[in-house]
Image 1 (tube, rainbow, N blue to C red):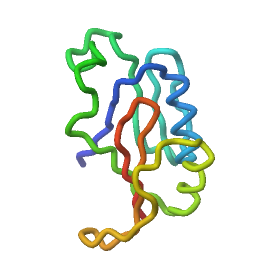
Image 2: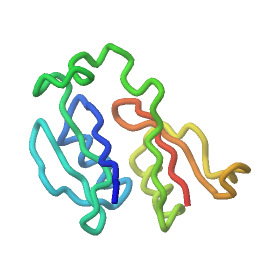
Image 3: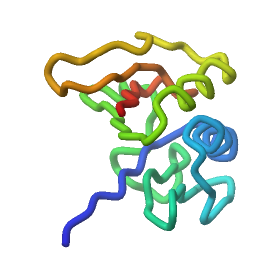
Image 4: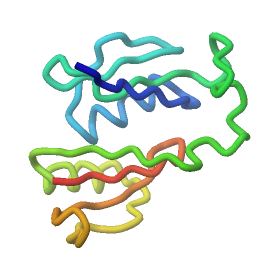
Length: 122
C-alpha cells in the first residue's frame, strides 16, 4: 500500500491545527508549536509544520510563494456540515457549493489561515 501524508508549512501550528479541527472535525494526534499531525479515525489527513524549523529546504522561507501549484483536496462525507463550519470560521470562501462537471461532485473552495487553496468535495 502507498499512502501520502501531506505536510504543509504554516506560520502558527497551534492556530492552524484549531482551524482544521473546527473545519473538518479532525483530531490532533501530536500537538505542539512546531509540528502537528491531524487524523480522522486514525488516518492521517494532514500534517502542519512551522516555517523555518528543522531545516527542510522547502519550508525555510514563507515569502517564497508557499502554496503555488498546490491544492489541498479533501473528500468529505458531509459537505454541508463542513461548509457551515467554514462559514462559522469566517474564512475566505473563494467559491460556494457548486457542481463540478469534471468530477460530477458538489464542492466548494476556500483559503486557510496561510492562504493555502482548499477544495472540499463530497
